[in-house]
Amino acid sequence: MRVFETELPGVGRRYTVEFADGRRLTVLLYNDGRRETFWRAEEDDDSERLFTLSEPQARKIAEIFDGTYFTPVADELGDTLDHARIRWVELTEDDPLVGLSLGESALRSETGVLVIGVQRGDRTIGNPTADTVLRAGDVLVTVGSDEAHDRLTELLT
Image (cartoon, rainbow, N blue to C red; front, side, top):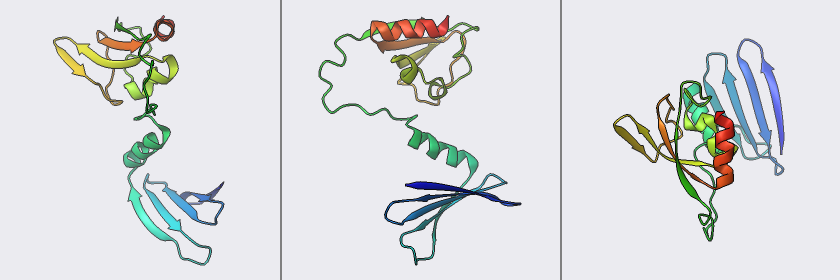
């Protein structure tokens, strides 16, 4: 697979992903934020427009490819949770996570801790999504190994 980038003066930028079998995926990024995607199955074919996206839609798809919303889990959990601990962590105004969404914080990938709930005042957010923005005073209900919780503590200090 090869990727080509071409500046399109006054228009934007074009990215072309060329696969080993000759197929091509092209993404046009316009200066106004729109994105258009095209597919060409064979060298002699014309490109077919697949879809057009706004900037927020394109970011959401990029997050899906990035894995922000999904972390693969082995089919067999086996002893994965044998050493897991549940802990509660209250965020203060000085914590670096305040103001970030769970997805932006990358808590799971950075520490190994999974946030399974957020207590916000009298409200409980069960199974928070990657879009859940963390606030000072939130109590995070976390699950992970002792080592993962140690990494979380280091992150917050």
